[in-house]
Image (cartoon, rainbow, N blue to C red; front, side):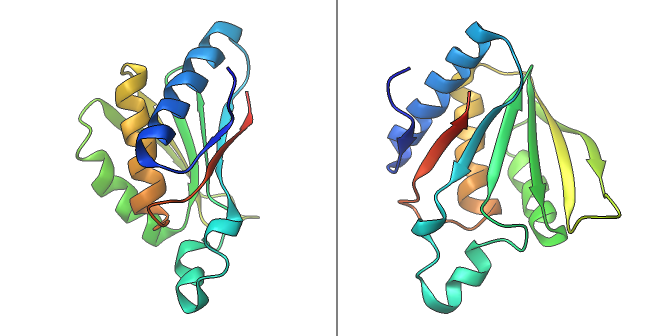
Length: 140
């Protein structure tokens, strides 16, 4: 893998596919994608909606599972997004007492291209990020 960030939708999807492929070859831990906070911090009042109460949005992937943290409102949107991806099902929702929001584990038994489409939809619609948000691979 030679690049670790992307801003255009097509490039982000390629990044997700490349990272998932590299992660599967390494076979350990979670792969973590994180939205670049600089991409939405300076947008005035809208920054509050883009910057979740839980900090910079991130998505983890491992062994056919997508892992995300989200608010209750974002959870409703996540359920709507997953409705468009029939191969993706919520396996577990955890509401830790010592943390804001919820942790959601989603079964993602699909090829890397379909997973990439779903990941981008989560970043764009669940977290309400701008079209040109930079996404980083922060842990491979």
